[in-house]
Length: 544
Image 1 (tube, rainbow, N blue to C red):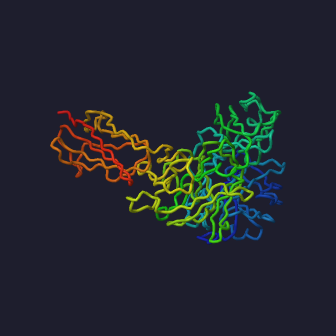
Image 2 (tube, rainbow, N blue to C red; image 1 turned 135 degrees about the vertical axis):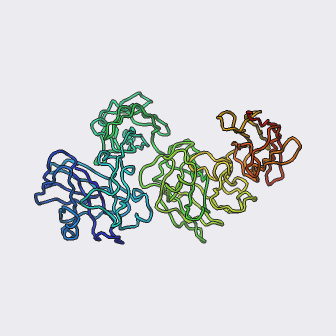
């Protein structure tokens, strides 16, 4: 028996009754009597008090007694007293048999709609494939039915959506000196996950005394050890032979764990900030743990400062325990999906979504990080004038910190993210990071001869750069053997510390150039008047 549709936010209606409901489906081969089954949400529980025989491959709508008459035209309907109120933004709901066994549970949130308009109400969430009941966000989406949902009938988005991936151990956190909790990206098989020999802690090569999967979702397993964990020690926990609902197996995975310490001044620094996103975009800021401590983000807050110097718009960085280890980056945004679409995100686990961020005005503002005692850990009073001066439109370009060791409040320690890095590096090392800002660099071409004939061999010439200082821009011009410019490949492009450009053998009008010798002339410069010029000779050839 599965929960296959959830209608948590009926307002504004697009065609369905303005009453919450869930839909259940019998995916077994035998009829099931739902009498005395229970449906719950949070601490609220309702019971089906009358006999109701649900046939195989059949569905039923469960709603409040007062709403039954509104749904009977859609299909078989079961009314219950004290129907749990479904949270619009996020909730955990579950279905329990008369024997008290949790048969199915779903922990949904607004991101599951995958559609900002539909997440504002009037549309149901539907399961895509009933053979993938533990798929979470990958197996749910907003209904595409014109009335907003499909209660009592085949889901509008029903399709084959197999789960072929093993579960992933996302993170851990410690409850006390003897207890570690593992967090997986999907529900795991509770029987397999309860075998203690499947977990090994590196320091003592020890298995836990107990492994207890935490229901009803079973994405977490509580591990009890016999030896106390040491402070400021990074352990490595290895997990193997854990399977998910569909039998996909983790062969072996190792992850960091340990006891968190209280963050102090400058332990956590502001490392990157996007305060002027493109239209319809979102702000983000990135933190970096420069200390030797393991720090729990649930004890840190971001905030602004008002005119009197008091904190305002205080936002908790995490409602759950979330460890950030030494030399780790974490980026915060109010729209994780948008961030992935707009910038390169190398580690999805390094991005946390918050309901809202402190106010980050486009021109200038203040961002403060404080611990739970109210002590300031880091403060940044940023200014849009810190951007690279030759950039005319600064929308969508983040400010990056150059050197971790220099103070945050130092304008020369900040510059625009490089265009070659997509104007932002959320969750990983900055494109402009450097502790030593001496004027040096190299420009190289990967081949001496290239033939742009699309035969898969040396069709392009790659011009690579390696800088030892941030804050530079480049012009790259291609000249023919007579010294005439034939292609302005790059103009005033901001550079990271390393990267590359490619030339395809075409001129500025995208016309083929004749075979022969060409000069790749590169000029790098910064706003302090430092320049350096490079020449690379390449030969353009073709097969005749």
